[in-house]
Amino acid sequence: MGRVIRAQRKGAGGIFRSINTHRKGAAKFRKLDYSERNGYVKGVVKEIIHDPGRGAPLAVVKFRHPYKFRQVEENFIAAEGMYTGQFVYCGKKADLTIGNVLPIGQMPEGTVICNVEEQSSDRGRIARASGLYATIVSHNPDEGKSRIKLPSGSKKVVSSQARAMVGIVAGGGRIDKPMMKAGRAYHKYKAKRNSWPKVRGVSMNPVDHPHGGGYHQHIGHASTVSRYAP
Image (tube, rainbow, N blue to C red; front, side, top):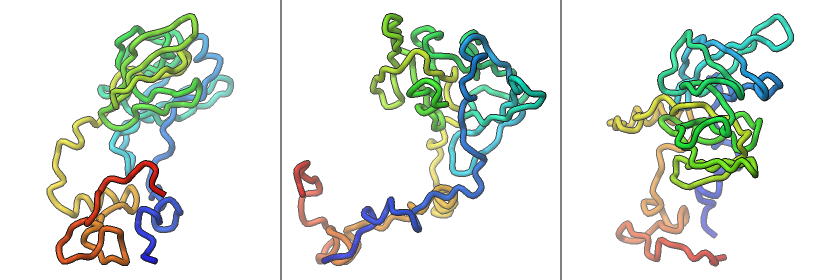
């Protein structure tokens, strides 16, 4: 028996857990309530902040509590063009402006959107990384469904009640700048998780990896695996 390889050890926690010590909190839409379903709610962007381990910046948006005399703070994923002091409107009757959150069914076909809900009221699931966006392809009012094009290029049918933010996620072009040195990669992954540096399988010994060993660094068998392999 050889050693348990890295790919098998991942997922069990331990040294492979994500590092979330300095993170600013979950980035979500408001909880769906009566005022969003039937009208709109106004919030103001208090600041744009960096979230360690995330490429996209976050916008801290403050709303008035619907019933009590207090303010409620939400972390939104910032859309490109958002600024501090900007008014953000969330709800069925909000305008089609960058940074506003509307149900997909209220937006025309061809609208560029981000942080899209997969199911109504799940508070944002799709197109959340920096520079990403989805596009509304078509609506089917009879079934209450809408078709969107995902960042991968594939199409997906979601509920027309699912919300999305207008615009593309800020922080695009992040991967255009090369890392240049190992130290930058070290600090990048230090904030994310233990996934760097990656030692190649062919540079290991036979006990450590199926690709290890041999007088030259080579895999020694087909690198593709049958779907029906045990």
